[in-house]
Length: 281
Image (cartoon, rainbow, N blue to C red):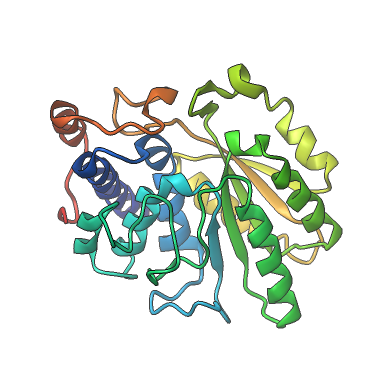
């Protein structure tokens, strides 16, 4: 396990390098949440989820992931590339005209790994609910994973989906909330307090778990424990504590890097803090 964690940490360093380089190159993108969710994505794709980089859009016989807070596309693109879905060198096309790697994930260019366009906040969980229902109807015992942001929980459609999942007893659905306390205009508490999140999800009929989004052992253990809850008839939500901008000291813990690209000097500083372990694209 120690060697596995060490390898995941090395991958995380490289993915974080990818993120800051991608947004710097086009002076556009969302590094804060991407850096904060890096360890989660790596755990999911390299340790937890049963998936095939050959990619079948229908996902028959494999676990499926849906990113609801689509603006953190840089981390998803990097992890998809680093796990074999498409060439790593394609990361250099991020946000360019006619690229498959748009600022928010899209499907019209056929990027492997992406099954639905996302970025209009609040919609991804509804798609995940539909996919979980589809898995059940098909007799497919694979899991549906979804990620949403904490600020995104201010969207009403989220709670419609939450009610639906509990009503249909979707115990093949595992949702993670990136609980970093920050959103584009400030802290959650300043913009619109989320209140008692644990109590809210429980009151909607969900099994609530919590984890440290920067501890690989905790992430992997919690996600695997969530999978073992299938059969209960209760969907699972994991409230994941993270720090926005994790890994780059001047980006950590502030909403100011939600959607801001580093300049040349800031990029150099960021890269000096992140070891190149797998080779830059």
